[in-house]
Amino acid sequence: MKKTVVILGSMDTKGEEYDFIKRHIQKAGLDVLMVDTGVMGKPVARPDITNYEVAAAAGYDIDDLKKDTPTREKIATIMSEGAKKIILKLLSEDKVHGIISCGGTQGTTTATFVMRALPVGFPKVMVSTMAAGNTANFVGIKDIVMMPSVADIMGLNRITRIMLGKAAGAVAGMVKMDVEKKDGNTRLVAITTVGITTPGAMKAKEVLQKNGFDAIVFHAVGSGGNAMENLMKEGYIDGVLDLATIEVFQQMLGGYLAASSERMTVATNLGIPQVISPGAI
Image (tube, rainbow, N blue to C red):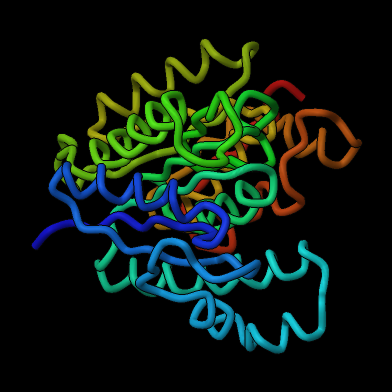
């Protein structure tokens, strides 16, 4: 069975570009599923999942939305939620294997909202005018590849053809790549660290590996702890050595290394064995 890449975006305003991406992904031997989140006009590219279906998945009728003339931001939020539900369902059925989108501010916001809901390791490529700036709000703690579009994504020309073609190749390559996997029975222990606790983290990693465990280390600067606990929720982590709990105190006192308010509670709630140390406090 061929693997399938989702092309997500507004097929009315970016239809020409998405058709171009589609052709290049198909040249790489993959199937494509076009999901339309556009609401401005008739789609230029023919979607496999229409904007009516996307809105319905979020509990709305798109014609009613247009009559009520809500703000662009409200419609985008609705379409993002609908697209997320549809793609997560397809993922649970093993019908989609990667995702790509392109856009400016609103298109990037909509697409990356969906991408952040997808698991780590699922290929995600976002070609964006926003990718040359601070992408923290778009990427969050997920492995989204942010590719600067260089020029605005408004039609095909000698520059945009290069950028979009290479982006199509990137997501196709990720989907087709078979990654070496170690014995799935090896348990994975998460370790947090910052600079001052690095010697301890290195020694702990050595000891764990000698005893037959894999170790994964997270830089405890806010995003690191959040990423670790997200992987716990996704079922990847079997144990936790929370060596650097600086993020908790940063969150309590308003520091710039603050993690989320649930930091250091997830392992307990999930019943994952953990050892906590007051490292770097």
